[in-house]
Length: 150
Image 1 (cartoon, rainbow, N blue to C red):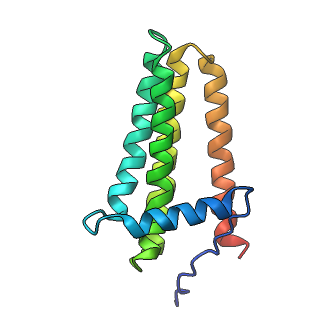
Image 2 (image 1 turned 90 degrees about the vertical axis):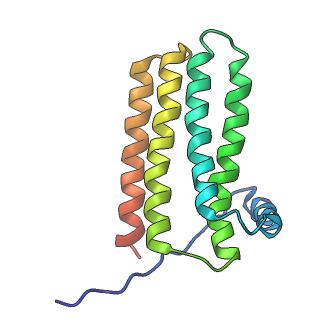
């Protein structure tokens, strides 16, 4: 039985701010010290979402924790968006590994954020659960379509 070779999915980013974001990420990637690797940025993104979930949970005690949520979301963006950009910039891509790790950690990240939101009191836990289920269903569809509709 022969096995087909891996074909990396084509990246399409067509959002309103996509071009500006791409320039900003390339600018940052060019200035990062050589000892920082894409895995460090991936870890930053995951830890930032864990911290955002904790901050959401703590915001039920003091609403000023919502400022920390915003900071954590910014750190998550930096880590999650910059990891692949840095890997491509330094020509250190790992397409299969990167695809898997990025998407599995995204599911954990959203779970952390939703968990914190559910205990914060700003949204009912039932609605949070429905949002999380809808998110996972959409992710499953996107992941399957990525490699079956190519």
